[in-house]
Length: 446
Ligand SMILES: [Zn+2]
Image 1 (spheres, rainbow, N blue to C red):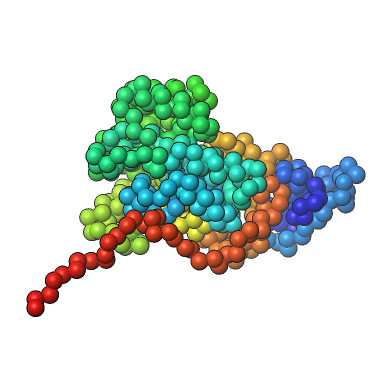
Image 2 (cartoon, rainbow, N blue to C red):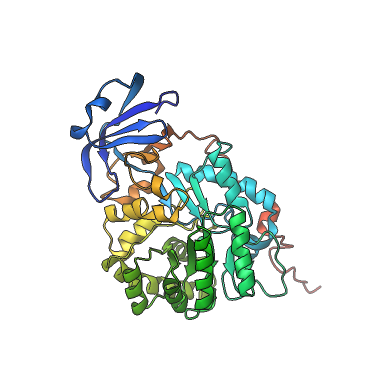
């Protein structure tokens, strides 16, 4: 797409509008500036768009030669500020926030080049994701359109507060510990003042498959206050009780839901609450194989539980959203965004095209800042789309291969890398903690 032309016609496309599972074998997309003017079967193209100009403006034509054209991906769950940490300590403590922000701005481009034109960042240190979002919006840096949460609101039992009580954590933490209903309200009001697009609750923590971090009445209060202020609420909920309470409290979408029980699944279906499993982090962690055996066993048990209940959820028609949990050392930026779709196919028995809908149409709800403008190729939405060699609707693994992308288009403009792709990943020592030595220095007998 030429950047000096307002009108463009992308033709000879295998078109996935992702409004539903339909594949249009010969489709056309007409772009008007940053928006889609029309998309559909070429046979139905309105005469107005068939000529070489529209309303006196020149219209450029791009023949994609039968390549697949589909919406830009919507990653429902990634943390732009995390910086690929290998440990909780690294994530919480060492790196100064200003450095995290600069690093995040660079990583945003990697995410975009992976075909992710929209993403949700459900929680990080104060202000970083929002700053990247705003910098992307004005073109200071390149990245996906972001919807962001502030710090993840947690109790002592949630993932936002996992270090010992005697370790005081400041601004570098992605968690905001609240110890009363008043603090819960205050945190939500502060975050809204800071410009968040959603509120994230850390509704369960490590060490339990059973109880939640908050009481049901506390969750109800949080949802009520966030909704009053016009913000949806997403919740991290792995344990049984946390998923059940999330549904009952009216949480807008639930992350993980690994230990959800059957009665809760029935409520999920009844209420239409979307689930965002993010199994990618579990599977990648298990495959990486660098964990202690006990941690590995616990993760395998969680994955087994999640696969079992989420397969049922899929069969019963629950809305599943694909989110990659990109941002950890097991999920580096730009590499694993599409794996969740692969896992939906391989582990939950989903068809490839259905999995694609989970990372386009159905993921748009997890991007509240842009929900109505992204996820499908329809007139009036952003011209965010991918031109892909092959048929991802028949084999979703194609989308993990960057060489298959002929172009990533965001807002009607083809994305061109600003940084050389082969720059080495250089790290500051403080990003990894401060080891004295790699082992014991043992005294040898003289
Ligand atoms: Zn997360």
